[in-house]
Image (cartoon, rainbow, N blue to C red; front, top):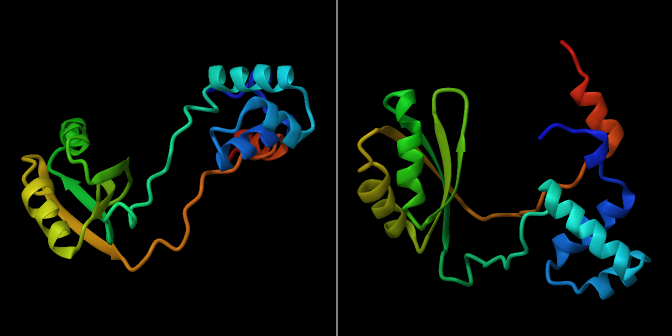
Length: 169
């Protein structure tokens, strides 16, 4: 998305986004009270933020531990040929325990986060599902002792955005 004047985020938008990141089901009236604004303004701003793609959709976040997943792992994946990366990503989408996938630079091509019930379950996922994908050449698994914290990204101020967008080497 190109950053232009019509999709700049001001301090009111930031307050709205921050409040909705805490509680995506917050009624507009409560949100308006919380940020000191009118319901109409909040409704218009939320609509604008959705249209711009800043706000995607409100969701409930499931606690992996409370859902029975005691093991969190990051798995680095080497794909045989770079043209096969899209087919590997498609196959990974079919594995429910894989909760995110990133294309990365370096020796490995993809990085995925997996939630598993325990280490045995993780081993089965890696051997029977990940390594069974024909285009996967190899994997490297790191098991997390704990997820110390997790958060959504904050919205940078306009000066920071401008500085880095205009940065030339």
